[in-house]
Length: 145
Image (cartoon, rainbow, N blue to C red):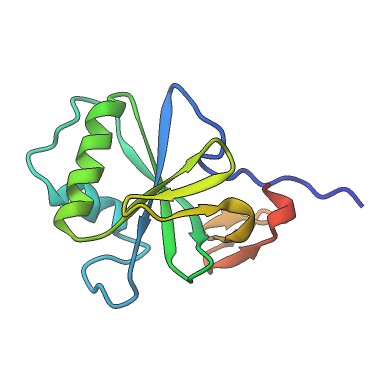
């Protein structure tokens, strides 16, 4: 049986868009999976980027020690958005992470995990019947790696 691959945001590099993951602690209060993009972007004002935007990727990477990182991406002024996200995350005291070389998950605090050792979830996606699935849904590693 052929397993259809699910796109893992940031696994492959792009010149037009950059991907970053934000660690959202369950007790943080200010940030949740529905508002984290706005909270991170707005934490540092005025905005650094001159154009483009930031999007919630509706994807979660869970490290072997159970830290949940929520995906986002940004485009156009990538350098400006990168600075905006990093400064916003620092002001809110949350870690950021990126996928490196399609195999590693590198966290801003120096932790480094192999993607094959992580778990994955997605939410707010369309199923095979065209219905939106809002709840966190596990994704098998074989479907994305």
